[in-house]
Length: 256
Ligand code: C5P
Ligand code: MG
Image (cartoon, rainbow, N blue to C red; front, side, top):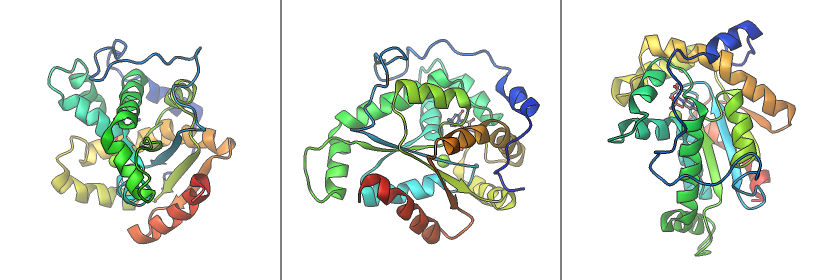
């Protein structure tokens, strides 16, 4: 079945209880906490910062395509899954064990952790020389401009994450939705699992991740589709062809 259908409501609610205690607020994440909250509005102004969400089922090619976009357009690529895995591996993290359990079960980590990791990474990229140099290079040598184009990959994956991020971090300009039939995704993930070392690239976790995607993440795509922000990309095609479609979708947003 293509991973593009919205499930019945009773399935959605069943997926929201993770069976693992929710964490305390992410106060001990590696970069200092910031002051953004729902009453003061988003931490970043969408007029100054472009956020593009890259969504799609597991194995749809989100990371592969984001890597190309980083090279050509100077985006900062923030993969929610990569940030969670890094936090899981960080010595002393109070969230490590919890994150590992959620990932292995294919469930969505409580949003406080993921949003704080993303916000911290955006802030770090905006103030780092590396971020500035990257975009300056891609833009043709305009040195000193801050990193301001972000690809947020694999996020939001649950409605609460979407609402909270839009409210407190930065509303997105565009949502790229990589659509791919499930058998192709399965084949790609099993192939990747031979070398990825990931806890969740195995048949048991993959099937749970597909369920979570359909039940919990598709409503997010539908939500942004109603806002007119979604562009569907057929990601069963070759990497090159998918990339060409993505370039056509993002260039109007970038004014390129
Ligand atoms: O995107 P990726 O496949 O790397 O995500 C791996 C896992 O990380 C997901 O299956 C989920 O357990 C967790 N995750 C999450 N919330 C996100 C993104 C990823 O809980 N927004
Ligand atoms: Mg990925």
